Image (cartoon, rainbow, N blue to C red):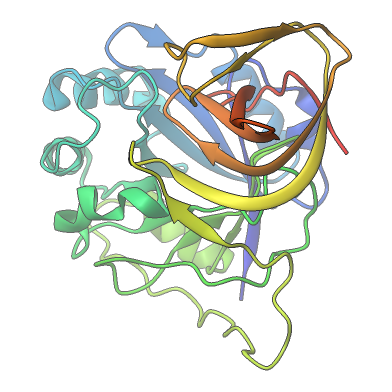
Length: 304
């Protein structure tokens, strides 16, 4: 049995919550110790009115994990027991990213106060950072076939569970909306919201048929900066002025400023802490352009 979800934040359209494919909605509640999503209550109530299962997530800011857990729980106190609790562990705006004890301390504090074990949202490449939570928590892995996979069709590709026995959920798109598949039924989803319930076992995950061509096969590699790149021939048309740089970093030297409407042909993409970059082949090497906000998913144009 599987379920599908979307996740939303303050900048999300209500239409994402209303999408008929989504059986569950995961709402950003807090970040760090100083931010509460001003649309949280509205988004939760809209999802409830549509009969959708709920989840609430805290975006790690990298401060004291106990203080952030307390801030999360204090602000969603009225929702405890009504939906899955999630810690969002990403590099953007997270000063502790790379720390292998931060999430463990956060989930322990949430469990101490509520009896609920959080589900951990993390990219496949950072699973090792949360491996010490594998015996207690479910894992929601982020891995995309491409940055233009704007479909509810689940890509046919392998996704690692790291130290976790299985994947609880998989976020497989991050463009026009974040789509996820969960290897749960509604009863198992509800168990994640309840206190003192062991981590439910998800439904068996469909195995990839190795004899069948994989949709959008990807060639990946890691460069000398530690960035993971994915081969993909594509075209991006900007809707604003963008910097073409010698490297995939905001600090890299500028080759040129490309005006709005520029057509950028690229052969690979990489998701960094701040931006998603594409690589443009040039006569004397490569240029790099930030085409999407890695945190919010906002694209600075359209892909073709």
